[in-house]
Length: 427
Image (cartoon, rainbow, N blue to C red; front, side, top):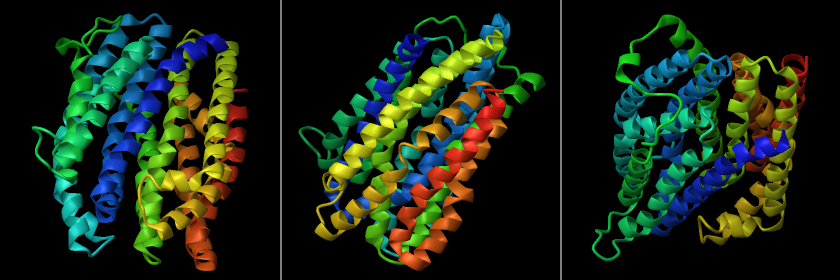
């Protein structure tokens, strides 16, 4: 089973590593403009993450439903899931883009009164949200290809988009060669172009077909996809709520803490996106074997995925403990901000390894179609435990209390996740 999980997870893990690297490089180039530009990017991040959460979360519902039907040998239903899911996800992207562009000035004004930061945040968001529909289509195709085991195609498409992004970032931000100097708007345009390039490669034939005639809504099919997709969406959207709430707590002390939090969330994507690569490899395997009635194999797949994610988190912990100043230095040259960031990374990283349990259990539950149980874990990690804890501890230890809240939350969530795992997976 371990070689099977690795063969499915490795392409996605590699592509997620590159995607995480893109996130860091993108922020690195934006930070070269000014600290205000990096702060603006940090403030836009929650809404940008919210849009991605909706389209990715619904695509996870498509992925899990397709894998189940394929395992149960119901090809026609798998085709209908892919087709209808594509249409609905593009509509999700369109509606959310319009809403986010409209509310962005008010949203930014909730966290800062600096006109420069609000202006740059608006410039970035106005462009990046224009690409929400093609991005929704690309992410939907990614999950469809994963559901039928075409991990290498998904990997290549994601790599293509990320590499395009990385190459265009400095060209469009600083105006190198024939390209105009667009500043933070260049970073947004580079992101959008990368998403278009990624979408353009999804042309290869696969065992599940996306056809217009299969896009007619069917109540039972929609119910099944949304029953997984809505909890998955909420799970992915919760970090946006978390970041906004923590920004509000930290802004009382200094704008530097907001920058540090934004930098941390960029860095942690390197870990958690990599872990998510393993989850993406695990999810269709678990769904397929669950649909085929192979409960013993489901448990073996879970154990293998947990082992791989623990390895990822161990590496992340070592890096954050050993060279935190170098990591935070990617986003700012201010010695005081680097000092604050060093303290934050060392405290937060205490919870990385134990978070492997929550990450793996949550992904496995999605593969089994148990979206509500997966949502419970996400609520614990991102809202229920950490936000009250961060508020209380910040009153006792100021900003350091927020950093302590991260690792305490991971320990609490891991214990509860394991209890749910014993009941739902190892019953």
